[in-house]
Image 1 (tube, rainbow, N blue to C red):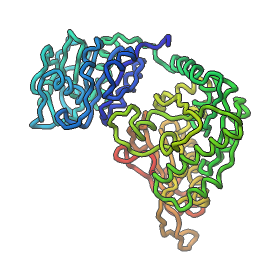
Image 2: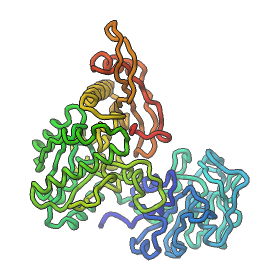
Image 3: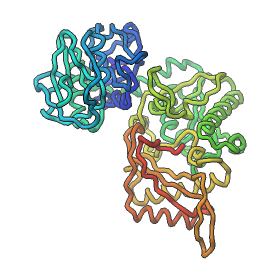
Image 4: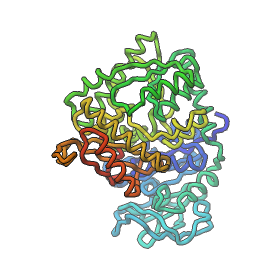
Length: 515
């Protein structure tokens, strides 16, 4: 596509931070894609990469069955950058020597380097880096030289400038390596020669062309919830194929307060998109009765969601595609997007629990984007800020915030508490500072005193986090008086809640949602 340079391919070896690498490249306005570690050199060549980055990973190169690339990846004639495990693969495959380090390095290290190298130009020496490895390179492969070191790692950065092969033993993609972006900039723009042509305008143009080619003159059914992801999906597909798109909004009984009314007003009245409203609240709540296990909840909701859409497609006549707002973090956490070794954390509504028999093809135009990129795309497509800036909302909705068994009464209670929490955050002008804010009902009850009488009611947990892409998150530090005000309002105004907690768990170890 004109306007987008050849991609930087990130080979995924299952690193904890591996998916951030693609993000860092995109922040430099260069196009990046993630490919499985075992993609053949022929497959990679067909993608016409400007360069390749080999991610870190939890394995040892000596471990039986550890992920290894096609050795010919080093002979493609394009620059290659190894990170941590990726660097150890250089030495192992190209006949250097990798051994178990006497002293493992985890955490912050002091990195010194030769400042005149293409990869490290502009970095201070010494500078801080983030290490996370148990193996180290003992002998360099032929043609490589050491260009940087730490106290415990003499080969912390290596290079074969003649072949454009580079490696760093630390993680430049994490914030704990403050000058890491300079390394990516040197590699992506300097060594690989990528320009700064990738942005949401070019992505939109590329996606519209791809959707038109894929859909042709056929029809698309889009799952529309009113959240950022589905809204941007609908707007993008509508730009591509117009009235070939029909959006279906399913009221599954698991939505936030006022959401059904808002969705119908914005998309039917303002955007004039074909919108079908389906009231499936009773059907979902009946299916979820007595289910407490979170994975079973998700799969039940996901399966029924698809069933409803297939039925609606039948009612509407022949429809060929089912569009969903699946994002990169959804795919990464559910199953490795590339067939790589990433570990499944939990299934997602958009990508987990799909029936084996599905009468429509999936159309997921956002599956390579992080959330902030989706927001930027929404602005490019002309969506209003009230949609673009909405906090993320999970596909299973309040089903995964009503921890334990789901009832209509518990959902109504949760809706009221959540609405109060969000209202107070907006009144304090803090909404846009927070990545995601939510209320949960916990599967326990608490003794309280309300109106001079003993009560035995629900416990509500509030959660608010900061993040850039949902891969990692930290809890938001509210002023105590705001939390006190929210707690007072919930206990006074919402029936069946007599205790409010605030969740201060980061991600990791926790996830953003409770289930």
